[in-house]
Image 1 (tube, rainbow, N blue to C red):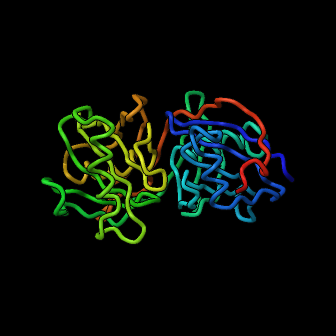
Image 2 (image 1 turned 90 degrees about the vertical axis):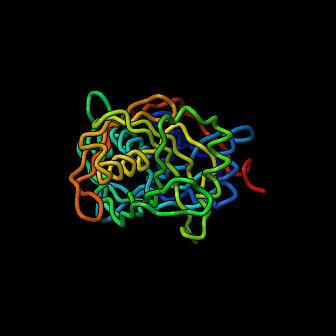
Length: 274
């Protein structure tokens, strides 16, 4: 199979190449994924999502960052794959599917998609890093996240944010996997603004679903917010996060937000091989 059909989708500007592969005929290597996701020479996306069959759920979601590496979960991608499965008639409005991080429940709503990310765990508050003047906080929300508080997320240009976030992402404290880095400003007890530098994409993205969840849970443990928390993304969209606090993080973490189709098309695998 050389020609592959795809759907380009985004969740709050976090964009993905979506491939329905229930027949399991599409098996790209890391270099092909990176080439497909390249913004100037490929289709362009923050990641690739392949919808595959599952013996334990309605389907499975395989998520790859734009560098070609497979990740455990993507919150915005989970909403997009849920909507795609519904549009293809694979599931009804309520569903459960598999991700590398574990089972994910989702529901298609009239005003967006709601996904149950499950637990946030491994919460650590008040970590000192030699490169930052302020303390940082970490949590695992399907993937590892660091949270750095600021008064106003817009005080930093994209270049300035990337400059200090990239070394944090690769700091020895978070090796070998690295960490996503979130810059967070609390607006009130039920609203925050955040920006995310995503590992595997290696730049700032317009939105990060698991970053919104991690930011909401961390700030709640710092006594600054409480569920539900409306999270303003770097691109200006709003994601809603609800959860129940636990001693080590949170459970019942729900992420609600948009999932939209940008366009559909096909590509030839032979065009993206070295």
